[in-house]
Length: 75
Image (tube, rainbow, N blue to C red; front, side, top):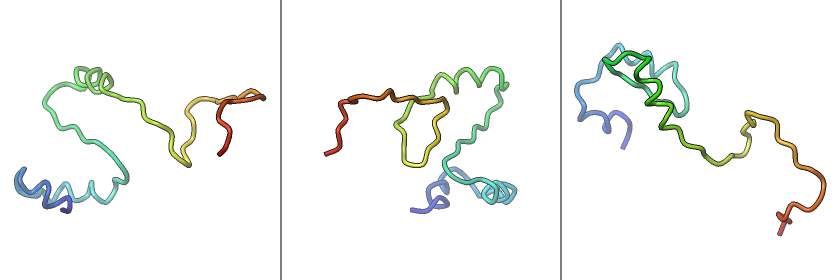
């Protein structure tokens, strides 16, 4: 099922939103609300979840592995 079919049940396509499709890439979230941003921000930030690292990701902080046994020997 493509994106269009998935969202078809939510109303008619809006041609103005097609521009967003051209400039957005990857996994994103869009929040449309009448609430002020300062009320939404804490709610959205409280729903963040940690995830495991994936190949090619850059750590947000420095990671130092001291020399010695790690308990993670290759097998």
